Length: 541
Image 1 (tube, rainbow, N blue to C red):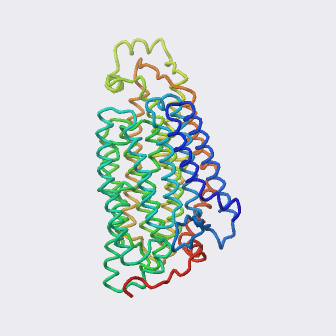
Image 2 (cartoon, rainbow, N blue to C red):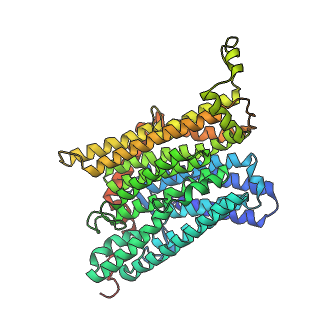
């Protein structure tokens, strides 16, 4: 193996070693901080290196395996990196760097174990993206969930504890379903390798196939909880509103793990399952995505708290990605991946920005802002004759511009990446149907289009209302903002601006990723080369 091949395991080893070292040096906060910064920066560098390596590799070998202990793939643990896994790793590492930069300003001093929990969460996320079998996917899920439980409770407070307990109970139940589904799949197929499942499914007899599909359905429900799909998403707005800003920003990636797994397993096993995903029947994933977007749109119009507003925007993002995956097709998947990247970056920036905007505000500011907007005051009318305008502090101007950028990104208005992503989804949807030979677009597709536009309109209304209350308050106290905090928000918005300017190159990459997923051969072929026999007889045959 070359040095480049060993980079595949580095995204798991780096946070594992960093977290362990920080636990050894418990009490030395400055040392834990330094280790966390170095480990997160190293994770970003390794993730970018893997993305470049897999993007420049031979088109026929766009998936690279890593055999732990050099065991054959059907006996040992295998990690696989392809374009999709590398993309998710880079996205996670970039958001982690911004969240850590924001946390270093002050909030990391609230607890002793913030830094090790932060690294263990990154370890779980990296492992979930790289693993090649369902059992280790379960293991890494539990690692990231255990770390997320601690980070969600980080900072204490009644609201935070209440929301975190709901989150813990729901995810413990989902983990139980995950384990039951994995057990049923292994009992019938005789393997948990994602690639080998595509070979085993056609060999199952009818009775075993029914039991296998039951296990897949249970597993699908667990993934739906992870992806925050309706009706299993009620816990998310409260949790994200209660969590500290850097934790909520990093949590923006968590909902994408469930969507990633559905996309990964659905693409690998689609041919064996007769062309559709084994985890959801025809059209169900689309219906769940549409329901999630619609529920989120109602929530956006109903909430008054800006943190809960950000939480409902996470649901809009999750629902859009689920619906696009359910509709299928390489064009739609490529557009959905571009949307996934842009929406996750903008959501992370919005969570950080909300913390800065909300500082120094009191509930009376909201009432006063609305009252003056509607009625005005006698003093205001008198002063209008003497004043042309009102001076705006430079800090509020910067925060206002950042808020405007986040609003444009989340609502999908031009000219930023959010608009390009949603336009690409709609364009791919209609183009795919025209290429399919259909004279008319199916009513199901029209429902997706309408709900997508309605959710965007709801986001516009909700963010305009929140911005009015936040920035048009009279004589509000200016927030105390540190340079590192502004730098973290600026980093994420800079990345959003970069993918806007380089949208052509990013869409080309995500489209190539979707094409590789549709072909399935690079992924399964990489595993087959290192397996003794993927087509071994299943139990009972």
